[in-house]
Length: 251
Image (tube, rainbow, N blue to C red):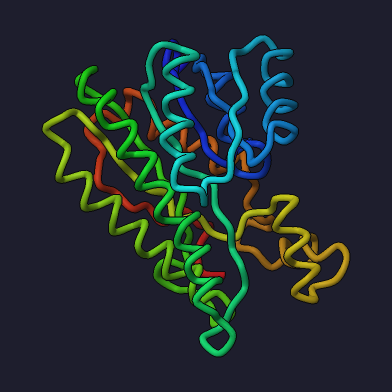
């Protein structure tokens, strides 16, 4: 078990990529704090993980509230006595072009996708310093460098997150903090399926899109979870400040 005895908070882990990461971390021996916006979202996932013989607890709150990220960290420490790693996966991908974006859309995207990870790291930092080590994994997007026209503000938030990753990796390396980011490509989740329908792709669109992908299918949350476990494990002790493009290739 690559994460045995580690305590990991995974924001946005009641569904999608975050849930995949939380479940994989738990099977690798970690105690996982499962986070969703409401208790009704996070508790079923945590209970399911426990039912499978692993360790998990629920936490909830809207990370656009600036008080919530720090509270999630403190609840993790209160529950398990420590925090060894933080995965910032909570995010939104509100559609907006340069012509349609409003200050409210931009501010909400920035609050969830960039400010919340920063505040969560800020809250976890004293614990990492006291332990002499810690690991952060930010879940970004290929849109950080190649965003489409209908995701202008979203792409900006992910570019800012990448800058945060690189900047903090240098600032706190002496404290034992490792921080990396996965800029993931198009990944099939339930939320992404619904967004595809809203974008007019039609029922069953993943099968059509997947057949055009380099390896014949779309990426799935478990694909991201495999990489996350490595980056959070002691096997990646000398890896920090990396913004890794995680995609099956040009598509």
